[in-house]
Image 1 (tube, rainbow, N blue to C red):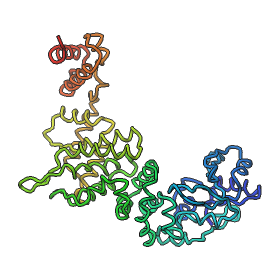
Image 2 (spheres, one colour):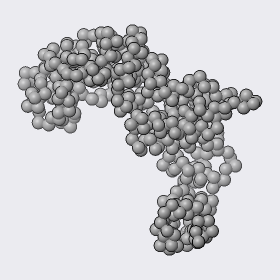
Image 3 (tube, rainbow, N blue to C red):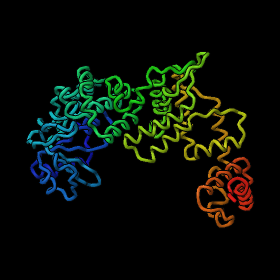
Image 4 (spheres, helix red, strand yellow):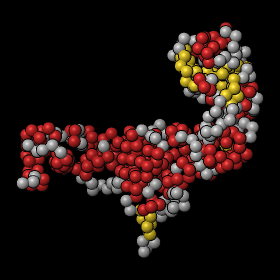
Amino acid sequence: MLRIPRVVKDFSSFFSDAGFQCYLVGGAVRDMLLGRKIQDFDIASDALPKQVTDIFRRVIPTGIKHGTVTVLFKGTRFEVTTFRIDQEYRDGRRPDSVVFSPSIQEDLKRRDFTINAMAYDLIHHQLLDPHGGRKDLKAGIIRAIGDPFERFQEDGLRPLRACRFAAQFGFTIEEGTFASIPTSIDTVKRVSAERIRDELIRILETSSPSLGLSLLNDCGILKLILPELAACQYVGQGELHRYDVYQHLLYACDAAPQDNLVVRLAALFHDLGKPQALISTDQGEIQFHRHEQLSAVLTEKILRRLRFSNRIVNRVRHLVAQHMFHYEDRWSDAAVRRFISRVGVENIQDILSLRRADQLAMVGQRFVSGSLIALEKRIESVLAEDRVLNLRNLAVNGNDLIHELGIPRGPKIGIVLDALLESVLDDPGQNERERLLKIAKGFYETRLRED
């Protein structure tokens, strides 16, 4: 018997009192058996949506067409779906229509994998497992229900989910199931960018994203959804690197902090421009001149194609564009301040995390870079001094330049402010209002003013 949370028991009692069946299904049952934290409560019942609405006060009609409503009960969300049999999947994602059924057995037949096709009877306290999901769960196997070709033709997201589940749980995909994935590529093409993005995020949130990404590559999906990454295969990098660009990016992603999506995305994409930038010198040396700029362009292209938010696009692109820095002990304090200013104080920890992941993925083993440790200490020292590191901290602003010096509004204001910041980064003592106004006046009159 599973240990069911009290709120779920209380919820199921309303179905029992009304004479309906009530099963906990899908990921909740799977995760309980795995001893994992439950994220969502999916309920299956013979009660129709209208009947569920009559039972509970707070019901949201989230998917009436497919028999699904969301019930808000004691601070918890329950997705309640009527037992159903799916009809034809003409869009490669959702059934055109459904037929409601009185049978939980029929309902479980329509699901994707055996480990997701178990149901727990919340009224009679019994586990229902008609497809051997518990056995596959113990064996660590992802297996499609019935004919995997049919399951994948129905829903193009299922092949990605198979790879994601394998990475998430450290499972293997059953041979016949995996062999059927390449036959479903045309169906995968019909999946929305948003849904592909969500599955990619879930893969990147696993402990070893390289496992899921490698499976996507092996079955032909990677070149469909991330052709820029697939193109990095077999691109060598020279003596300092143990791996080709593709392997390096996967291992860098693994090494990035698991709870930081932005850094994981940056780690996965930071060298995408290397295939385009690759040149070989007459001495046989491999070079990738300014590959970080090409990588940043490709990164933005991918993230916008997958409908990531502007905030994530901008942050990831910035990290990729800034990842090629070479610290030396001879850097002056002004050079360290310029580095912080260029990267942004808010991005410092992320860029350092990216560099650590990058270095680890060069040789395939953890090591501590002496130069990176030294740079971190220098950065800590500069930040502790509370020096000016961006335009917001200058003792003057654009309005001061306009009203005090008569500089006209427009691009020249930004040029002058950038010049003032450069001066203050060189000498923090110059960050005084009168001194900066004097510097600004001289710079404007000698460099920008048009007589």
